Length: 343
Image (cartoon, rainbow, N blue to C red; front, side, top):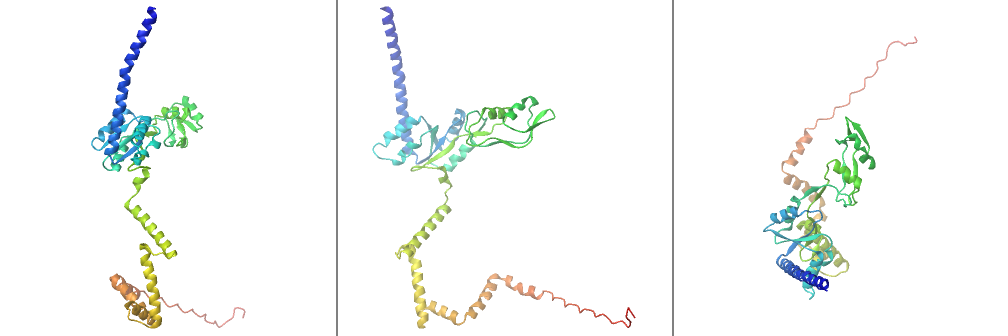
């Protein structure tokens, strides 16, 4: 009896101790939801970054560097998705709703009021080299250059496991040719990781990696490479397509107005020339050209020499100064001798 009630009281005491902890966790969750909602309403743009293999010290340094410029927010993906779903359940803010499907993996937010390129430049300065660990997906390919390694001949087994040709030179292992030990996107093996550790090589660099751009929606990072020249090129290409379609369909639009007027004036010009009607100045110019094309052709070099300055004048003296070609020397005739060899 004593043991029964003693155990029951102990369990009730444990449950009582757990209640304040649950209330604290719930209060933290409510505070986080309010913080994320405030950031989404306050900042017009941001960056969604990937934080795998990034230490807390790196993130702390980035927070200090971006103080007053940007704000970092990290949290569980389930909490972020639940918060945004609650905020968009009435159908408002579709730009927030576009964040929900991409929240997979170790992601976080960097919100800012300023230029995103400045934030990205700051992130690039806070990177840290790291060794290759077994089982990690390689972010880049790794090649070991040829030459001495500084390892003693007893450790050739590491190179033999990876089929790396070596030789012994002056009491140490020397790699004969450059060899690629890790390929980008593949998992690092135990042999590769052990060899790179032996060589004291840290091939990978980790930092907050930009995965998405948030500004009225979610976009890939390549949108930051779009410039005004890129937009104008796309715009002019679209205008050309609309003009061609309008002209082909004989449907007048603003972009096809100028080509349509030009085509109509060509017809007017042809009729005026056929009827010998020269009251229009452009018709008179075309008629003068057709009557005496040599006059226009002779005027073109003169205009070119006038615009070119001394360039055209320097051509004539150069031609005059050209040395005359030497006249061919006459062939000498053989004189007839007064005797014959067989006389």
